[in-house]
Image (cartoon, rainbow, N blue to C red):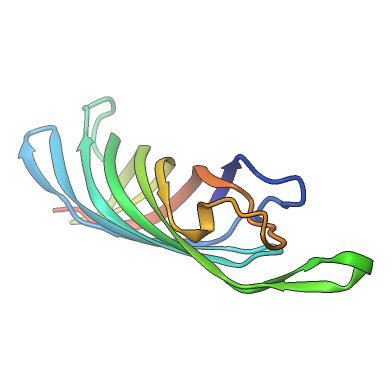
Length: 171
C-alpha cells in the first residue's frame, strides 16, 4: 500500500510503500449485491514507521461482465482507522538529532475497489483488486499541527492506494 499525504510540512518526507493484510467477508443481499465487514492492517516504512489498523463495512456489486470462471466487482464502504507513528529522529539545531515521540490518530476512511477473480477449483478463487482509501476526517495528535516541537509527520492520510492479490473462499 502506498499512502499519499496532504498538508505535509516542509521537513516531512513521504512514506515508502508497505505491506498490507486484509480479511473480509460478505453475504448476498440480492443476486449481484453483497455486504460485509472488513479488517485491515498495513505497515508503512521510511523515516517514520507507521502501523494502521482499520475496520468497517463495504458493499460489493458483482456485475456479470465475463463468463465463468471469471467474476468482476466494484466496492465502496466506510470505516475507521487507527494509525500509530513510532518514535523517530529529526535533524535539529546544529545538525544534532532531536527525538520526536510517537503519535496516534484516527481516520474516517472511504474505501473503493475494482476487482477481478477466477475460480481455480470448487469454492476457491484467486483475485486481483485495485483499491483506494480516501481519508475524509481526522483526529488525534498524529494529525494536529503543533509548532511547539520539531515534527516530521507527513500530513494527513488523504489517499491510500494498493494493488492486492489474494485467495478467496467463494461459496
